[in-house]
Structure formats: structure tokens, C-alpha cells
Image (cartoon, rainbow, N blue to C red; front, side, top):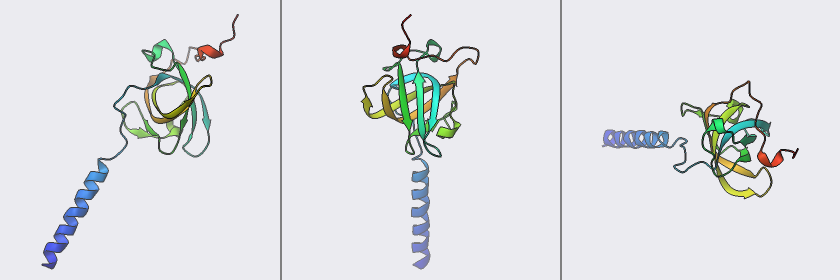
Length: 140
């Protein structure tokens, strides 16, 4: 009887471990609110901070927003191009990213919001000047 109970406990613990392993970070199943180039990074902690993302035609089709100052917090899922999890400190200026925003978006320019997920999808050409949010370009 004791062996059967011990075996049952081992099986339950193993199954719980396997189910927890499948609960890792996942990309949202919706379209991102912004797609563009990381043009600035402001760290606020070890693996937290704000990234400015500005759309550029080389990033692909423009999403809902043309730019955003997105806060990357401890709960933000961040992914490399290959889909593996990374952290805020792995992001770089000139990364081309997609970002999903959660909660309210401040009506500033560029808008401000909290990212629920960020995925690197490429690298912006080092020979090109970084894009500027259209609303911040001085009229000539």
C-alpha cells in the first residue's frame, strides 16, 4: 500500500511539472498594436524599462499605432527572432520589433503604454538614420 501511494505521489508531481513546463511565455494570438524600429531605450531596473518603437516601411505593414513608448515590465513576455524568451536587457536599438500593449494607452505623442509582449523580428539597417515619430518631425 505504501509503495502504491508513493508511486501515485511521484506520478502526480511529474504531471504537475510537465503541465507547468508548458505554461511558459507565449505570443498573443492577436495582431500587434505596433510594429517598428526600437529607436531609444530607457532602463528603469535590472530587466525593465521603456522602449520607443517607431514604424518604418522596412518593418513591414504599419500596425494600429505608428509609434509608442512601451514600458517593458517584469511580466512582459519578450522573444528573440527564433521565438525563444529573452529579457529587456537583450533588446537593442535598431531591433525591428512587434509589440502588444495591455491596459490604457496615454494620449500623448508618441503614445505611452505597457507592453504585454514584444517580439524581435529583424534588425534595422545600420546605414540608415533612425526613424522619428511623424508627429515629432519639425515642419520645414
